[in-house]
Image 1 (spheres, helix red, strand yellow):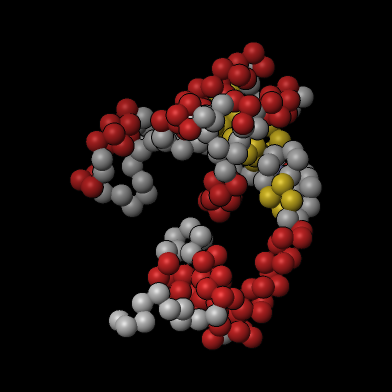
Image 2: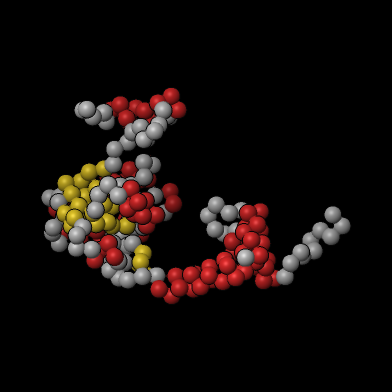
Length: 204
Ligand SMILES: [Zn+2]
């Protein structure tokens, strides 16, 4: 305890720890552990990770059509002719797009808004990719717009806004069902989820 404030390691290592600590899910303690792990596995892990990050920095671009990120523009999804061009899934973030792709229930096209409308945080319509969405739908070929936004107040506000925005274009707008998660037990659900699930019940 007599050496409080004295640095344990060199500035390069401190910098590595500080940057790792900015990653989601990592606090200062886990960042220190991650840094030590990387340093110990210098050749097997640190070197390839450095190369992968360098390549990501140089090659990754945002798709100018849908807002997905990829190493080509338009992205692989927008280029894929086998996808259903009549179904456009609107998501908040690229992470949501990737989650839906992993689920694999549909082979649609996507549109990434880049967030949600949030008056309290000063996020208005101009801050989201909304005009490009209207342009895409107005160009024709889209029959259904699925609003796959989060079941939060901001997500639902955004869904209503987008529905109004597209109302004159003659497309069907749908939203995700709210309900019992697969494998979920009723007794553990919150009242809001349970109420939404029983209202949205379906035929067997
Ligand atoms: Zn794209």
